[in-house]
Image (tube, rainbow, N blue to C red; front, side):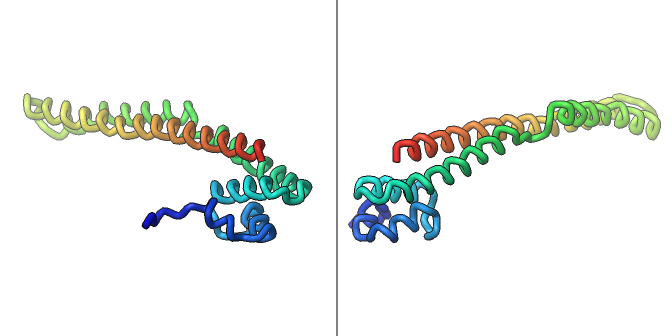
Length: 154
């Protein structure tokens, strides 16, 4: 027995009004399944005006989401530069504190190098987070574009 939920089989048992409520987002189905309900309604020759009205609203909502995602920023470039400069600015502070608090010797130098290296390594997660944010943003835009294409086909 296949335990995976197949909405298209479930939709065959539903009447037109129930499918319309699913398509309109009035029932607890995820977005993709509700689009499948719209396709099922179109195949049943349901009232085109009602389908188009919901489709227009959903397209408007998706386009607003696209604009929101396109405008989203991890942090802007200037803030990112400032963060790097601030973190790198800690290195001279480390040097000054270690140098003034101890008699400078090879061990103090190793402490300064170690702490400076730790500060620089601390920047790596921020760089990767910014990269992951960009990729996540791209994936979301592709998914929304597919939804737009699907809605346009309904």
